[in-house]
Length: 520
Image: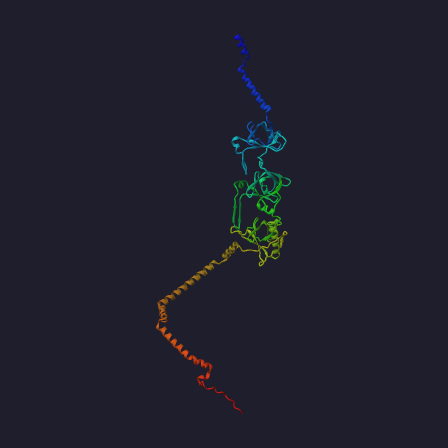
């Protein structure tokens, strides 16, 4: 009976050998599920070239998290580029919007930035940016460079370039040195022959930009000479290397608030930008002689010690060929850099004094280092000035009067010094010195002769004899006193004679004899 029970137990016992194939089956099912039923979507990414992309190694990242891997890389059908097949992880369908962006992250050294240094050891990878569209897509075109401003909550604007060079993507937009935006991309408009830049202004600083704002390219280092000294301004290192775009408003008038896709012009420098912003302000022409000194575009216009404008065109010829007509003066166009109210007042005052010939211009010096680089305007009723032509190209002309500056005076002095006959002056000076030497010798001879004859000693003795305590002085004093006494005694007699002239001959008691006339 025991043997029968043992045999029945063996029949129902499962062998351990069956565990191995069961585990293998489970793994196979999981692999099939993972690779067939639980696969993420397959994405086709078109690119210009597959530099740095390796099948099975290059991963796709979103916010530094792996979300896919490149399965294979092949040439496109027309051989114009490469196509990478990317197997996305499961549950990543929401990343594949129609406007999602893909680009390759690898080491890049550009004029304005250095990126992708982390890929030197780990290798290149593909970055994805989730779009906002509701449409789903599995085919994309890789960007050549990493897009800029994607994480910025900004207001998009367009800048139309009037510059000599191309502004690179990533260039910062600064307001008084503070970053408020960035250049995202650029395109070339063939029809308008112009470069259009797409930029973003941060929402938190959007109030700093309005319809009256002006944009210009900042070269990096600002060096200028002013009446108060030398201005030298150096921005941060990034701006020196790549430059930046500055934005500001040169008028006090309020513009309309910034709106999405507003358009602005960007100029090559601050002077050009300022001119465009002040083109409606009063303008005048100063006709300068052949010697223009240091007057150039950007030179200050000064009135009563204050800067009220600047030179915006120098020379301002109507025809470039006029530069060869040496008889004509060189026109400099100036503009007043004042607000609207001040411009109206200035125009009224200047027009009145131009009619009275009391508004004049002079070439003045801002400093000894840069002479002749300022146009100074003066109003003086006592010193009138007149211009040969009252206008040039329909713009009023302010007469220029010459002012002798230090440089001119030094040049004139040097010229006169060169014209002197130095040999003749030297000969005359030698003759004069020789004559003076002879005179001094004669005086020395006379002095020696006087000392030798004891003349000075005798003279001192004579002077001592007239001393107050000397006998001669006392005798002279006694004679003088007696003489005064005698005069005092004679004084009554002299008075009586003055009153009656015959008193010395006749007695004073007798009457004067009167002559009688005989009768016939």
